[in-house]
Image (cartoon, rainbow, N blue to C red):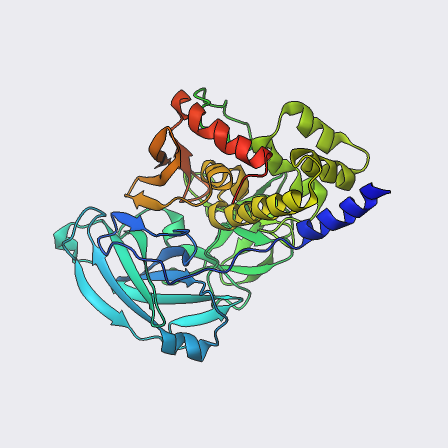
Length: 422
């Protein structure tokens, strides 16, 4: 009669996995933007950012999630924002001098859930200067301690439709800074300075594969996507995200790039159902273990048996490992969802297995995640993610894979399997 006790106990942990609160005190960043360096998780303070063309200006949006619950009034009092514009990541010459952004609720920031969305406008460089791109640096300081610097690559002249149109909430006030929206959400597709137009929306029900291991040097074969359904969406008019899966919006089918949006389940980026929870286990399991978990008649018990087997029947170890693993899955979904769920992406895979890097070196076309000493063989470990052109989303990155990752990756996976993750 012991098994039902284990079952109830472990599933309570699964249902209760929530993201850890973001701590701002240890976050610092290079004002030049070439290096984003934090002593803890370097992704979570300024979660997302993007820009939109606003005529003779560009508007930059940044999402901020403080570690503590704040009213809009308290946020405006306890946080300060400064911004500058650089020509490139490696440049220290400013196109526009740094300036303070006064926070006024409704005018340049709004609260959305636990996050605050703030925005500001930057004038475009004069046409005769022939400056076509830049990097907006947003320095966000918590007056109670801690500073983070967010970098937003900007194009001043572009043919990409996503530079001019974006998804907003149902009221058309707050932009959606993630690449996903929950099924049933009401959104608007709109621009700041462009006339209203009509978009065609294509839905793909394709189930994209998870990332290959860092040692897999063979590139996967391209997959053929088939349109399940099509609809028309008028800008500035509310529409409902009706289905899960990839939605793709274009003004004209001849356009090379459009705007992608992933329809996700209600509680996403959090997973609660066994059919969702068992899928990320592919990164740390054998084929037989995956088959046992997925093909059993009782998926909840199969998942419970899996974690208990990993922990040699130790409930406390299983609970601790479950909590850590699915917290990372949730954060990967939150941070890295592109045209597929975040846990399936290259960055999501590395984040889940290795955890947040000690620092991130970011440039226009790549991110290098740097991990300090993880075992006796390596004093520093680097994972390089190259930004790749993608018709659906702007922030698609692919990992540079090498067989030399084997002595790094296998011990990290084994630590998960032995319940040795901190």
